[in-house]
Figure (cartoon, rainbow, N blue to C red):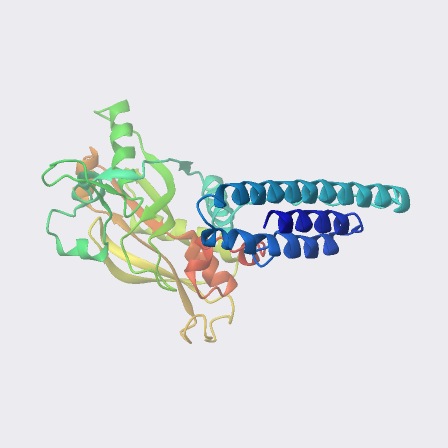
Length: 352
């Protein structure tokens, strides 16, 4: 076997000298140090040797293997350098050609729509107010007229955060931006407890609900909350504000309608539809042949919520609404699956 190993090494090195390209080099590797090579067959036969012969043959086989692998690496580097030198000598570079363009990043479509909504509201005199995403049950539900075990809580499946025994006030990821109403009212009341200043704010942010992910529902979504509190605020003020918003968002000829609804934190409550801007109200697949598209829910702030925020409901009144930027995008661009927004598929995102 020692003689055979010397023959294998000599023949392999001689054949390596005649190789000048990567394809031939790969074929040489397979033939001489691959699993089915003659060298590897000797390693497989070591177990058949006697205890006296095995160490010498094993050491010689390892030496040959190391030598061949070193020669392979050296030849590979030489071929690579030769190819580079040939390319530099023969290839030409046209310096008059334009350079490669830089791939620019861009805002996520949800962020674009969120900024558009806030730009319109800011132009209408609303101040942007940000609130936390991790809330207590008290802020997210109780102070918004959702007492414990209230049946309306079933409308919103919640992500609760384990934070010890907190009784009826556990920590959670907010299911809505409405807790920002309470926090804003508390801050405004702290400015002047006897005569709290009026409020006109927009509260944007991410919300989370423990729901089955489908084409129409996600576990996370953006929302924009609106809150106005002051003296002599009426439902007519709410209608005028939201009608103006709809015209600014969907065009000056946009028509709206208000439908009675129910939310625990507003009374009376309503949902707003805008005339389908795709079919002009004639009926299509997007508006389900109704001619109308739902864009938000709203209502007059419930007296209990005003009181929980520190405002005297006998003196102050207000209105609030909540809208979803992703839903507006789905309606405008005929997007039939909300999962596209958070799927990170560039084929979808780069369209915006």
